Image (tube, rainbow, N blue to C red; front, top):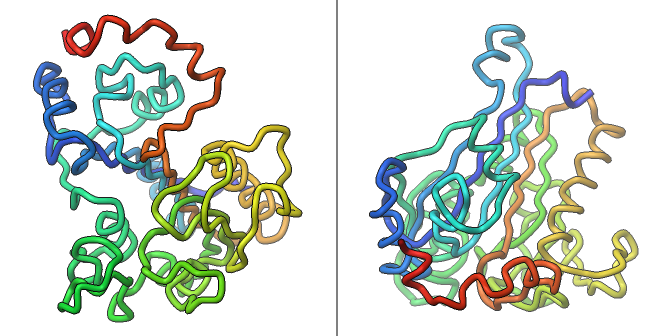
Length: 287
């Protein structure tokens, strides 16, 4: 049973300032608008690990790593934001919030560092996924680094990913695919290879290493397709299958959202929740 194994959940949120302090709300508000869509502050939640070590030292923990994209850290409720984020708030309430954190200010170098545990230049993605013909800037995750999925796989973990990959310049359906998720340590993958696209018909959407569309995907057919929900639903599907197929093995799940990266696509029900809320402009939100 999954719930009997020690469990670790880590949430990483790419945000709008290079550092931040949870005790200074006014500074948080200013930095949110001062550095639009740059850098990172993290929210890291560690559940049951210390207790698990004491009670069952031999059992490796299950690990869920959740990442959001281009989100200001004060956007969410637990950091004083006006947006309703009850699930994230509950995670923060029962976890740990960082007061200082840094990232690389862009999508792909942040992900390269997160996946490999080394600086982005060491991982080969010093800027974006274009090849600059310079060491550290080849725009493709290097073979000189090991991904967390590759490392955990050698320790007996089953490894799953749902969401945005964005650590290779090779995104075409015919490859090369040697730097796609299944080739870099993940056992199962649902998501997009490139960095952005429609939330209703995502570009480079794949199951495993095969291009699919929301229409022809044989495994997932919701009434309304929305990429954020699809990432969540497929992540849950992976865990359900894991519980049936490999309950004796630990798992690593990387849930890598595109939201809140452009394009700004939201379902009508979400938009209706905030109808009129921002009519007063930025000043009313910052105070």
